[in-house]
Image 1 (cartoon, one colour):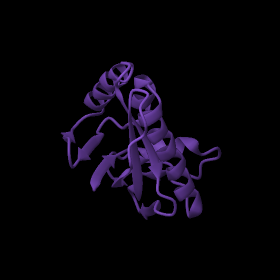
Image 2: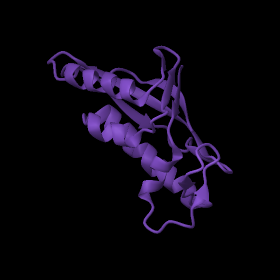
Image 3: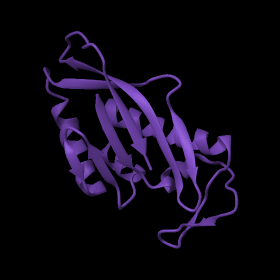
Image 4: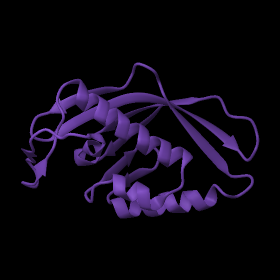
Length: 155
């Protein structure tokens, strides 16, 4: 099983909100952070998470990916190790984008496992999102592989 831990600034998830509630101070930076409440928090996090995963697996826009990540972004992966900066993560993504253009390149597709996505508010910080996903690979124009499964956590 692949276990992935992604760390996002919650403020990126809040960009999906049309009418923000009053700002709340961030416990880490002292900056103001807008947090929806109740079901709206889960919906905002889910929307931003969907945008991120679609861009990462289906798109190729390093500038857009960089705009979704906090400066103090960290990525922990059980197979590939730790990436300690948004800049390095985006550079690796850009390299992967270029590699996917080759005729026989491996292309991955990600699917959220229905009913597994959960969001837990963390007062004064933001939220923790967890879920399960399956991955399909295709080499060139060949058939899709049987899925592999993974778990993810995002802060």
